Structure formats: C-alpha cells, structure tokens
Amino acid sequence: MTRDLRRLAPGLAWVHRHRGLTIDALALCYALPIRTVAQLLEFGDARVHARRGDVPITSLEDLPAHRITTLLPAAGYGLGRYPDLLDTDLSRGHQIARLSLLACGVPRRADAPSRSRDHAKEGEDGLYHLRSDGRMDTCDRGGTHRAPVRLRRERLSVRPEIVPKNLRCEPEDRRWGTDSVAHTHRTPRMVRIVDELRSIQGLSCGACHKQLSTVIDHDHATSMVRGLLCTPCNVAVDSCPHLSGCPFAEYLNAPPAPAGIRYPRHRP
Image (cartoon, rainbow, N blue to C red; front, side):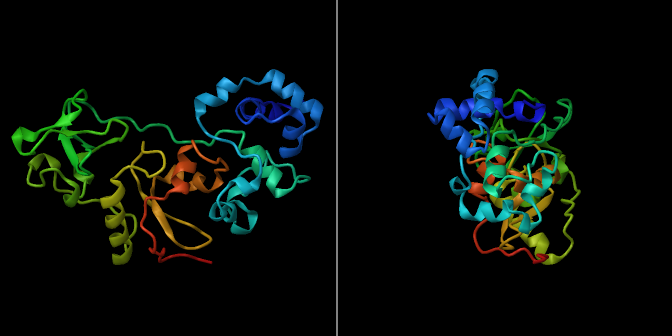
C-alpha cells in the first residue's frame, strides 16, 4: 500500500461507517482492490475525516451537473490541479471520487488587526461596525441603533478605510478614514459588479469567510458570476470534488451572486 493510498484511509473509513457500504461496494466505487480496501479500513479512522466535515462522493453522479462540467479536464480546471494524485488508468468518475476522500486546501485565517487600533466587523444587519475592543460582540454606537446589532464572530475583521461608504454603520464617523476601496477591476462595469456583490455578501471571501475578497469569481463553463473570493480560494475552488460540508462545496452549491450576471472578461 503506497503512501498516497494511505491518505485515502480516513475518508474511506468515513464512507464505510456513514454510508453503510460493504468492502466490495467500496472497491467498486473507488476502483481499488478488495484487499487494499480492507487494509485501508483497518488503518483509517473515520473520526479524523469527520472533524473536517466534508462529504465525499461515491460516484460522479452525486454532484450537481454544473459542478461536473467544471471538474472535467475540458474546462481546463478541476482535475488538472492534481497531476501527482491521478491514476491515468482510471475513469474520470473514479478519479474524482478518489479525490473527494481528501481535504480541500482552505486558506488560513488572516491575522486580525491590532486590538489597540480601530477595526471594522460585519454585523447581522449587513453593515460594518467600528470597534476597538476585540471582546465586544455587539454595536450600539451610543444609541444610534434602535437595538444593539450583534456582530458576526465568524467573519473577518478589516481595516476601516477599505469598507465602502454604503456598507459603513455611520459613514460620517472620521475613524473610517478617507481612502476608498481599491478595486482590482478597473472598468466601470466590473466596479459595479464588485459593489453589487459586496452589498450582498460583505467584504469577506464568499467561500472561506476568513480573507478579504479581491476577485470576481465566475463559472468558466457558463461565464456566469458566482461571487467574490480571495485569491487563494479563487485558484482552488473549482478543484473541489466534495458533495457538501467543505467551504468550497457549500459556495459552489449555492453561489451568493444573483442569477444573470455575466462575467465581462469571459474567454470561452
């Protein structure tokens, strides 16, 4: 049993426990010898995979149709990112099923701003609120709100000056700074798309919610915009073969962007 195959052990053990598949069925789903499957089940611990939370697939048909198109090599993405893990003797479906037993690389959380300085965090009202104390989880801003607004702990903290005025709790507060948001997309239409998406999903990445979003993400097969992502997520999101549970899979299954926005720079 090779080292690469041992990496499949926790995911295979999870599928065996939670899907109730026999050793013969697992061997058929993932194109593995029955003896190898038995060894992997003895070696693997389903609890290790369960801590990750992502749900593997047993066949390509488990995935929605729009995700299958992105994963296929014809799109230039997906499987092409795993040259060292692919077995060219396998069918595409078996390759993708095996890869779903592994974890996607989600970017680490960005370093939080210093608590001694003002920073902003998204609230449940969709606006960003200034705060200086990292322990504060609500914003009442001196009674200007009808009720205290609870801040979203899972969302990242950002520098006040990068928050657009339409997303600021109190735009007239001087602590926000005067610098405008630095768009990486220079054309007026691209800037309008960025503004519209940020008003829907905020400033954080639509997948990991741990980094500042910097890139407009779109489906390379249909040219439709899906949302705003950080650069690491934008590079890796189309390689996700998981059914659900993974941040990439949750994003791809329900993109935050409204339907009908076409990416202006799409290249068929």
